[in-house]
Image (cartoon, rainbow, N blue to C red; front, side, top):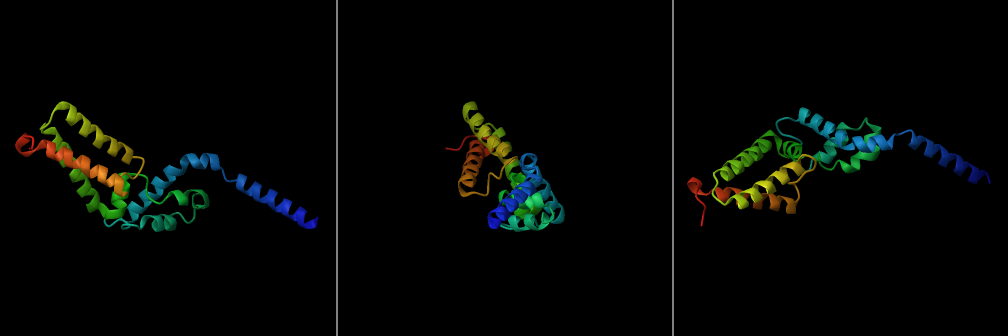
Length: 168
């Protein structure tokens, strides 16, 4: 009976300790915490980022004093949940600039109006969906999502064609 009593006391104490951590509020702020720690990593490594595959270890290090994040959020912080932060942190500022150049080239080529309005609208909408989704998730560093990006990019650039003419 003493062992059962001890187990009950420990269970109640553990339950009370966990209830002191405001998980409801924390779960709503989890993504904001991931963004905050990602921006801290950008501040610490503005030129080179943390390297491909280095995000999880880096965010673990920078958030080590945040018990709530370490307990509840770290398992979700495998990537920054933002395409542009992911590019900056994985490839550095030059990777982010190169990707930005590709997007500018895409929209410039698409703006040359080499295809019909329906096709242009479809390709424009596809890229905008990738970018919009990229604001809240990392839409590039998975093989299937990367392939969708590159196919959309290729269609947009090829539609522009040489001197605004469609390629045949």
